[in-house]
Picture (tube, rainbow, N blue to C red):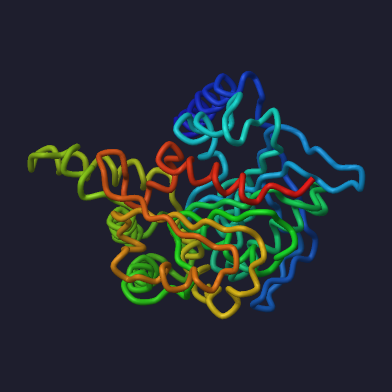
Length: 358
């Protein structure tokens, strides 16, 4: 039944985007990297990256790809999420900012996520301990060796994908024209953000049923980890609107927990959150060459504006800018990153400012 539900959801998602794009249909594929070495020193004989693409690459007379766009998902997500009506339906359709008939859009599943190699496939806690740099390295290999993309018009990402966007700008500064990190900060994860991630990690690892990753059924600690994730990504304003009474709040809470628990695995979640352990682009921000606009929202519990971090750090990015979206009936806390209707005007400005000179 669960498999049938997922297939139906994928079909509905597929149909919505195909309609919005005027029949530009996503193409799915897998790319395998042999003997992939992680920064931890661990290796994997075969690392699989699953991906989706829309459109086709366009090259100039020198063979340089001119229209490729890489979009990176958040922790626990997949590239498929960007095919939703609220995201792809706003950006990828005819005449829209990233019209799939003009751009070659690439939506990979990161290591440890979706259809890519992940702990739950068999290695469990013996799976290599990947980090964000490993994920960017694998994405670069997918583009270069798998899809033949040697240049990106834009790198954009949400949450974890936003943090990876900063990493992309530093690891491959000449590879892209523009960068748009959404719902992220360009510093190491510390303070409350780190504490929240420890809540997720420790809830799983400290449960005896986790059994060093060799559990027979999902450990109870996964429920506590899910509670923390709900807190991180929720919006107080929207929760109050959706559940204005005690009974409604209890029902909303129960439904959300049930829905989330149906599609998560403890080892996968553990690795996904641990991947942020050494993220810290701050020391190399001056090395970013591409035009960059960072977008956060004022009701983001994970990256609260009172920290003042982006206002301070963006000054070190040569062609950098920062936008803070104010709280409104339309914002969704941390999840505002996946509502381009609220920030697409800033993407339009970024694309215009980074337009290659003819």
